[in-house]
Amino acid sequence: MTEICLSPVVTRRLAAALALVVLGACAVPEPAPDYRNIVLSSDRSDADRAVDQRRDPEKLLEFYAVRPGMRVFDMSTGRGHNTELLARVVGPKGRVYAHGSPNLSFAAAKTALDERMKLPVMANVVPVMRDFEDPFPPEVRNLDLVTFNFNYHDTVWLGTDRAKMNRAVFQALKPGGIYIVADHSAKPGAGVGVAKSLHRIEESIVRQEVQAAGFKLVDSASFLRNPDDPRDVPVSKNPVRNDEFVLKFVRP
Image 1 (tube, rainbow, N blue to C red):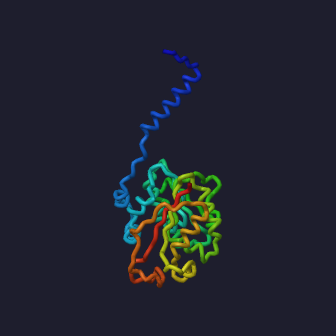
Image 2: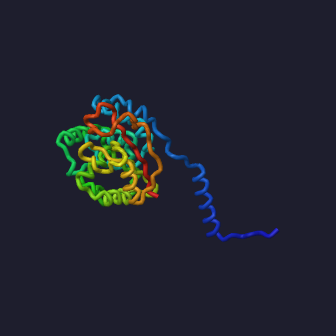
Image 3: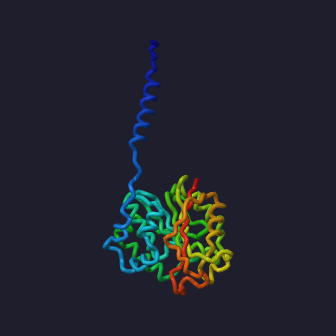
């Protein structure tokens, strides 16, 4: 039998490669947290629990697939309901950026967010005030997740360059990063024409615009859908629960 002799350098390289294989085989994904317990946390406010009734945050968090340690950007944070939930999930090793636009800023929402920021659970949250077209500070890159809940339609009547906005989201996410867009559904064919009058947008328009930025649509959720919504009245005056879509895109 021929004996093969390897140089010390080759031996070390083979050992290192073998170690990586072994480590990879042993590595396990970060386990999903108990989203239900997070939503039921005793220190959450009554106001947030009221919002829960129409947002189903346990299913939203599960759909996000958000995990401890992630870096997340919450577009158009508003009063911070979604932001706080994200902060609770990612924990002290993670980071949440709470974005607001100067073009869509309301005094009541700002006051509510300022008060929320005093909570210990918000210690890992960084407020960001920037235009929708350029929402990310230069140092905010390689994000795991961007969420944009129920305000995409507002970028229409604000005159936002949505192609530029979605490209900015694409660039800020790491490969494999997730972009969530949830909004109030308009009737097929309505396009963006009811974005201000009804605060709704046609789902197909969002799909087209986000995919045009390079994203791939990988999932859509049905837990906020309501087929009984006529979708022809403003969302704030709807006698029934609003029909809402939740879309998941990934940066390839």
